Image (tube, rainbow, N blue to C red; front, side, top):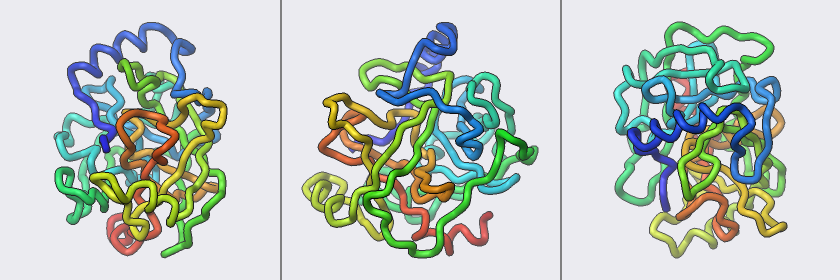
Length: 261
């Protein structure tokens, strides 16, 4: 299993290249252009102001929800948050003032569960037509297996070379039932804990690889305006049909979140 992490120097060079190519030069892996008005809760964590390292969801005017592994190697002073625009470069900027990483998260020792973090920002986020908070699920809500979820991000558009999208991209994901998810991942180095995690997969029945990729970590998995998951990890490569994407199960962490949001 590989986390959606970026190497800063390489990603910075290639991000400069792709942004210079223009708005319609790239696509997420078999996804499509999104409108921020349909995903007004989306935000991006950026390094050195240009490189998209992860995604996040807006919880309220002071708070974002993301993946813990997005923050392990980063100084808060290096991170800028962008939000409010379909076009990454045109996003509104704010800064991270504080971060809370779940105390049980371990980036090096499987199982890599508890991949969740809260960011506090300053100046506060300003709500508008293109900026709105995401709703959180009810506590211990059951797995909505079979339901279609929405996913969006500015992440890498191909797993063989580093190209990030300047335009917000979207793809539909189907929720996988817990038993199937456990069976698929049980013989890997990082089996899934369905009490804390949930799986989803894009439709690849046409034979095309499709779904999130590097740089999309931390972005929300959303059903009917409610955030069910935080994208955490995937198998070796983007859009692998045999292995569904693993998401942190937000409903499991509501007590942990309650005094941080």
